[in-house]
Image (cartoon, rainbow, N blue to C red; front, side, top):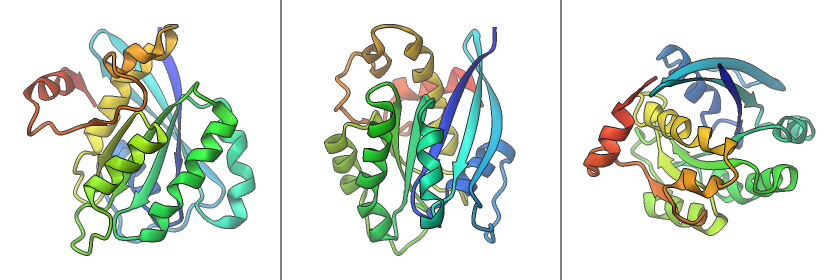
Length: 205
């Protein structure tokens, strides 16, 4: 049986939501993406251990004029990925606003992931520690830095989500966080944690 999960990408304009989706879908990057108009949709099948799941990826526009459309797409989502640009302080400051929109529409019935994108750039203004601290403060399920340009941590992001998603079908959803409370941030660092490396390698994306 193919289980489907809806993932909504949120964040300010230009933070790299579309490029993250394009990287996981086609393993490509285009430095000249046009701004998303309204809402775009793509789907991705993941083979995870003995399960096959389909991820429905909803790309939302970051422009202010489309903000009124977004809540209706969050209401039946399983995952909200909030993206900020690590070189853009304003996009980081707006994370809390996006998080509050998710909570207003879905309460605690959703996985919330915080992503600091564009880690390939040198002019970083938001540190990894700041991202981790904010994710913990808000109660996100985990935080990770990525680069859609060179692919850094993009597959790990989706593999981790894929590992957590099946647990949403259980009453004890907290077990999806390896038994940790929801305000505990899970850092994905496969170069440091060998066990995480083995877990992530066990699924194909």
